Length: 566
Image 1: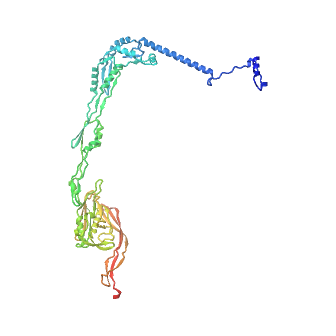
Image 2 (image 1 turned 90 degrees about the vertical axis):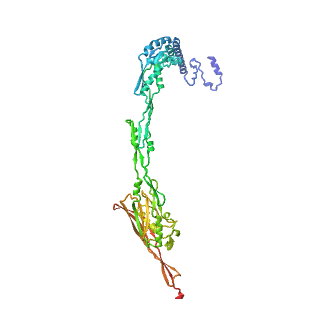
Image 3 (image 1 turned 30 degrees about the horizontal axis):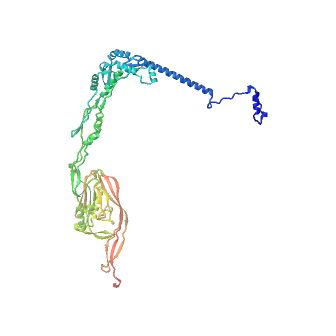
């Protein structure tokens, strides 16, 4: 210890006087070891030892397993649990297995049966008749080879697990293919049905439908394969196969309807000119009861059905002619001031053009034909015989060719209103007229003002216009489908305006004289109503129009006496 003391004393140390060195062995402590990666070394070495022990145990187990498998492989024996035809050949050599299979197979197949089912039908196959010979040596070889191509552990499981492993094989035996085919055909004869489609015949007055039949067939290849599999595995449980169905589909009833359907068409009138027409034949409608047929197609209790055509008989030519223009829908008569006046001449010429005009009725998607006064009468000219007649223009009375025919337009207007036809264009006069009540007039002017109405009934109408003496009568003929309904017109004056007197100088008059060039006429406002009656009872009151008429000034022309001649 003296040597340690001397060494320490020689070390440089400023606080040497405070250092006390103990030389006793008790105070000398051995330095601690550093831990491995922060772990307790004891724990580390314990884990290493345990892991090494596990590896050693695993190696020993693998070696024992390999030895066991090698022992079986070297023994030449079939792995445990392998069965052939329900015979346990496990643990046998191939020669032992061959002998056992040969000795057992004849008795094994005797009396065994295989039932092939399809739907409610079935046939029974005799296994002995189906399997003629068995190559026991070949099958024993297959049994020996079972599992030997697997890995070490898979083979070990085969050896140690107590389970049955039926051997499946498709060769090594001879199947009586003729017998199998015979039994397959026997099943087919019980199951298969010939496909028959539905038959539809149009006799001209009906549809005849013969019920179809679903076709049934079996897949012969599938049946033979299932028999082969059952024979090879020795699994003789019932075999079920499904029939292939070719369905007989009922006919498309909507399509059938389209082949026979004929839209009914009433006899109808076609206009070939303003006043000429032809009547076309009716078309009888043809149809079938699709709902009944569809219901029948869903049921199974029939083989044959006949469905008579359903006919719809529309209005025939003879029936149409009987009702064509048979009723007077409305009529209006107005009074002419003179039967021989120029105005009467003009009205007669225009009435001749109008009388006999035909308007066709509305039809599905198409409105009725429209009457145009200007189109029917045409332009009024001297070359056609029209004469000059006084009429109002710019508030004054002037002469105009074809004047006065507004009375015809007004008379037609009133008749059309009473017939409850649709008025599409109407213009009132500027000043009141004397031949119809307020609100019942209609004025026309070539190229500017027209009077129009539409045939809104269900049948053709014809317009008649006639001048007899001083009476102008317009009649609208048609087919009255509602004879119990009548109409009247009621003109209600709602306002009145006085006329004024206008004085004008006229040097052509003698001095000191005057004359009335134009009489004054009051202006009015009015409302025109239509009263509707059914079976004599009032039903409703309809406003037809609101009309305003201007006052016509009185015009006085004079030629006063000059002052130098007084």
